[in-house]
Image (cartoon, rainbow, N blue to C red):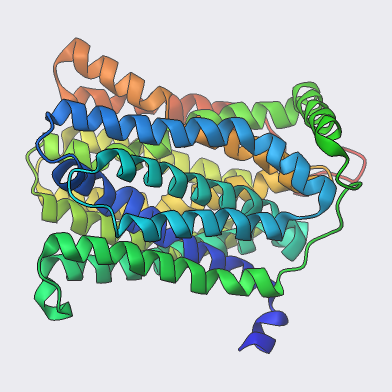
Length: 421
């Protein structure tokens, strides 16, 4: 198998998405928020538990958003992108493993480990994204990026399905209760992440760095150069602003869907089932969007996805039954991976050769800040109207303005050699 993967670095690269998506599904979206409230913050006021979890999420997101561009500059100069993927992943794996040992009521330790785990997850993604340009040619970016996302949805969904089964029927696995099953699920995530990270670590070869380590001053100088490039190149700047707006809408739907469903009175098990359904629908759909990108361009694929998101948002405003909620989950699954993967491949074509990690640091920084406007818009509209249904419509603004700006960015793959963005 090792020799087979050595000849297929694209597959070895995509398997990392299969690996780390277990953290995204089981820990980030699935079990940690509820377990933090019900086990580690037992006895605390619900609003206080929410505040504690918000601090942990905010700290991890802010730290990575600030660090990502500088880390990218360091990795590009030294040519250490694979090492950085492994290093950040090991931090996340160690923190996730340690969650198993955190006792009831120890919310401070749980929050600290969650912050470290999220940092490890996000840090690995910065350099994993940057390695796209090492394993694929520009004409292959759409298909290979989509393959990564599809692997992630399938791998993360499979382990999450197993973990849900463990929690629902702990006795089947020799576990005392649901709480023990959740704790063991953290160990399964760490093991899954470690095992499926190995193909990338062993078989992905990166391009040489841009010029030695250079010290901290040289790396900051490289970062300033990157910022000047972004600000002076209208195409890249316009894309990043468009991406910030529409990915904020995408991320808000991901993070607020369960809360929105609960506000409408749907049961928790129905919402978890809808989350699982989204994962498995997104697996083949991401591959289809990769083909759309190859045939019609990444920008066209993203715009199709944003049109569907706009329709889904309007549909969510009027939905009344769990069946409709499941239908919305299917619709989201059909386009979520496509919008994410084609955005990554589109940006990859805008990046100057040899500086992928540095520029993908900016790309991921924008993504980390891309969960700010949506929740604020939803919260403000809900407060002014007193209606949670009205709040969801505010996201149409993010999708609409993002799409309008994206239409102003040329697809580099369709440009002549002399017409660079």
